[in-house]
View 1 (cartoon, chains in turn yellow, purple):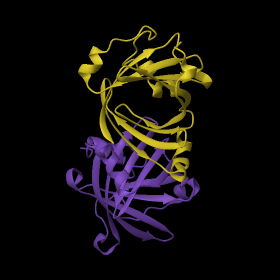
View 2 (cartoon, rainbow over the protein chains, first blue to last red; view 1 turned 90 degrees about the vertical axis):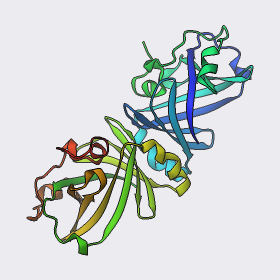
View 3 (cartoon, helix red, strand yellow; view 1 turned 60 degrees about the vertical axis):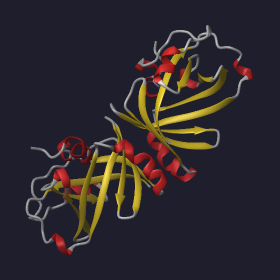
View 4 (cartoon, rainbow over the protein chains, first blue to last red; view 1 turned 180 degrees about the vertical axis):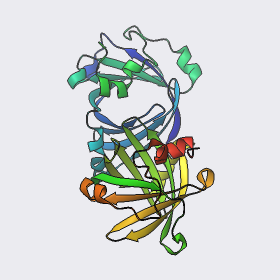
Length: 154
Length: 154
């Protein structure tokens, strides 16, 4: 996969009935975090993936490859101190899906919703439902790499 | 592989008879370069490897995994603008091997020798042969990631 991502992100103070939605446990860590690029390892259920991102903001380049367990375990130690756990609930919303990440561990209490769009036009036209709170698209404090290294914003 | 590397690095102004030594063509690019970690893709002959490094200086952590062609090709586009080509000659020196990298393309004319040691003690005790020039161990300008992004030191 080699794609451009267009996303918007919102805080969730009062999540909808998440217990009834599909959810995956996600464990992820950062091998490298640079000004212009990052490499992340993620375990989502049984699926082990290395994702590379470059650029920032509303649009950025991304590529991902699946790894087998041996390769994943070889690289995972380098993410020490830059890891996070969350449960991802997927909430249908018209033609869209709203991914709601409920953080655990040190980030317990933080809930962030993210919507991926097919185009920047669609992203701009999105009318957020009432249960989405403050928009934090582009706010560095809510990037997963920031949360993994610096913890939750105070 | 998960190991600590101990290396010293020298400029080579007048390389020994490199044409008679074993040599590999190396093409490499950086997916991410961070203050504390980096991820590199390297093609050395037919071998395709992803290497993650963390830390810096005389000792640092490193892990590497081989990738198949599909995975390599998926990630390679993200290294655009952060690539380099070189030929690596391996020169035996007692129990050690001196790797001499002859850079090509934009870095043509630059020749750098690197020696990997089993311990920091052995590294400190190394007596460089006369054909090795100025030591540049720890000099950021001669890191491959710097050469790939900023070019040769002027």
